[in-house]
Image 1 (cartoon, rainbow, N blue to C red):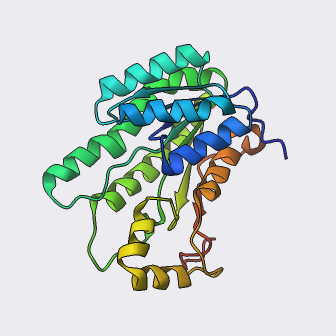
Image 2: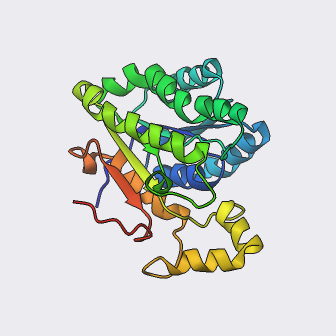
Length: 251
C-alpha cells in the first residue's frame, strides 16, 4: 500500500532514540523529509549523522519544557523543510512522584504539545496536516505501585489531542493518538526491567496473547499509516499498539 508519505514534511519531537527514532526512520523510508529534536546536543548530532543517508533530515537540541526553545525549532524546521505536513508529539518525562517533578512533566508532556501545535498550526493547516501524539496503555490501567505523573499527563495528552480532532479538524488537520503497550526498546525501560526484574518481565510478557512485547517498529508503522494520505478519513482515533496486552473490549 502507498501510504502517501512521499514528499511530506514531518516534525518529530524526542526523536534521537527509542520510539521517536523508529518513527523518524520509518517516515524517511516512506519518502518524507523529517526534522527532529531532543534535549541532548550530542545525541541530536549523532542521530543526524546516522540518519543522513536515509533521506532529508534536520535536527536541533531543544528543551521541550521551554516553549520559546520549542517554538524556535518549529519555525526553523518549517523554513528548512518548506512547510509542515505532519507533527508527531513524542516528548515525555519520566514518571515523577514529588510535586516539583509533576510540575516539570506538566511542561514537558502537556504544554509542549499544546504550545508546539499552536506554533505549527498555521503551517499544518496550509496543506491538510496530521497531528499524532504518542500516548500509552498506562492511561487505562491502575498500577499497584500507585499513580504517577506519566499516566496522568499521557491521559491529558490523549484527551486534548482527540478533542482537537473537532477543533483543528475543521481546519483540515487530522488529530490522532497512538498508544503503545509494553515495547522492548534496546536500553529502554523494559530492557532494564528484564535485567533487574526478570520474574516481573516474564509475567508481563506472558499476558500478551502472542507471548512477546512489541518493538519500536510496531509503533512507528502505526504512526506512519495515520500520518499519510492512506488514512485521510481517520480523525479522532486512539490506536492501541499492544498486541492484546489490555484485556478491555472496545466497541
